[in-house]
Image (cartoon, rainbow, N blue to C red; front, top):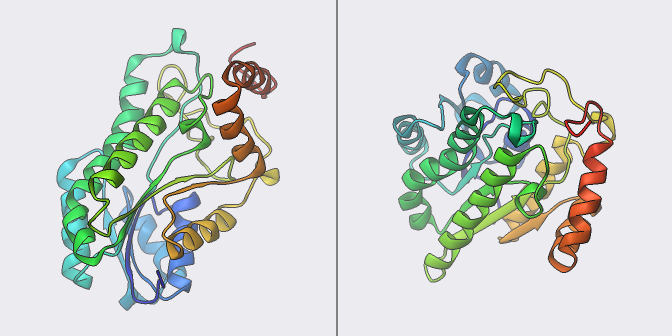
Length: 269
């Protein structure tokens, strides 16, 4: 898929992988629909994505069905079609389940899982017309569970199951369904991660400078769309983790526990 003049919706487009992807698509000549909860922030960023006539900003809370419907309708009204939907909007968490307010998991599922379902539902008829692509940005935690992130891992597993099923349902329709799993990528997601009581963590436990950049991640996503891939897992550690989990699940559990226990401020301690 050459992205020139393709109409691409990106949710969670105000920062991180979403913003980097919007810029990458814009640089390749796509018409980009940027969606996020803050319209003002999107408007400030839009000139860095594409010329005004090739970018549209839409305020959208993906947990609200009516917002997702309006997002799709705005994209079609402005550009006449939809070729790609990138379900990127998401939040994370960091707390032991035994300490967790259950509303935190509800919030994770509403944004990550239901946000993907809501947007895909309303965009699907247009994607079928163009034989386009629907993308779910998950995580390696959607293949191999990440302790102290029960809600996060559960939501990413759920997205993968939903999209894998959707792919089979439309196997003969020309629809491409991509499950895109970055490894650890530098972004604000860990700073904004929810703690046990639902408040923001406020700082990251990782050295963000040592992680894959959001811009590199966006290039991989663009390449995957070009090749109409169905699954992509990024970073050597990410691919090794997925492979090890399939073949040696109990060993992977122990190694994952040890890895997370070494994090700054680990909930295990």
